Amino acid sequence: MTDQLDLNYVNQLKLDALENIESYQDPDTPEALAQYTNQMKKALLADASMLSSLPEYLTVALYGNVRFPEQVHLKWQNWIDNNTMPSWDEFKVSVAFNNEDIPLVKAVKDESEALLKQSCAALFQMMIIDTKPVAKKEGLEDLNEHNDDYSDEYQDQYDYDEEY
Image (cartoon, rainbow, N blue to C red; front, side, top):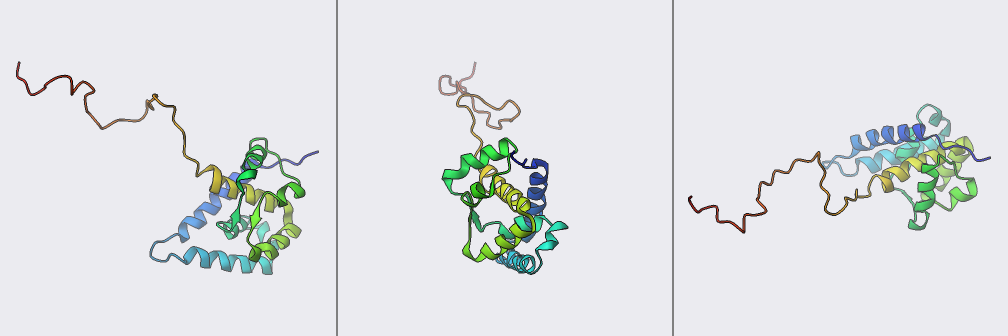
């Protein structure tokens, strides 16, 4: 039997992580986020049990340091769409961690393998799903969108300067 991916939990991890990430993304201090995540990694490596009360810290700590090879995007999308938790063997070949993060990944796996997988699902959503452009069907306009361009499609056919 396959374990379920808790999408409500994954989405909450994503939202909480984004809040932390956004608070450290400041153009005046471009290194702030990297410094914060490095401190967080050290703290989690020293005591991975803190994730029981602050699970979003793992998602923040790994943000920007995890890669999802293009050949696994469909697998991740399928796991998320079907609320399926990947097996460890599937998971470990579907995420590329930085070598320097491997000790943290091992420590977190020992603490909570499910949290590690769900944090990576949140990262996949943040880094891959949420960054895909939304495709519009050609020729159809969004009816809720207001167009401030008042150009007349017949403008070239008629001379509006002519007085009647």
